[in-house]
Amino acid sequence: MDIVTFSQEASHVVLGAFATFCAILLWARTRDIAWTFVIIGAIVAYADIVLTTLLELKIVDADLLLYRGVPVLSIALSNLPLLFSGIGFLIAASRRRQP
Image (spheres, rainbow, N blue to C red):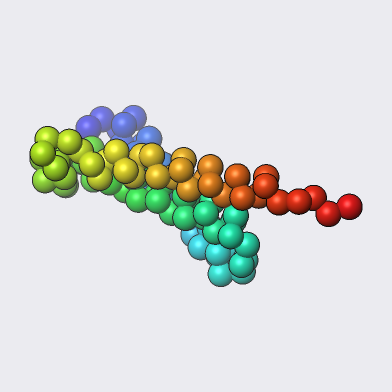
């Protein structure tokens, strides 16, 4: 791994950790279900960042994460943040606007 790739991975992990920390702080202060889904999406996105980094650094073997030849965990972690965020946006958009 060259310095450019390492710098990209390290900055991705650090900024993802910052965003996740802020999401957890917001989660402790809000009881809004729409925000809760968006926050869960951010946390799952960070889990995807961590897994991708561990795979890139060859700390975790990709073959261990396969189920019948399909990388189910990688697929789930890359798609669940979008699903949770989308659900949160739908809930927020479906609310009736108060005059």
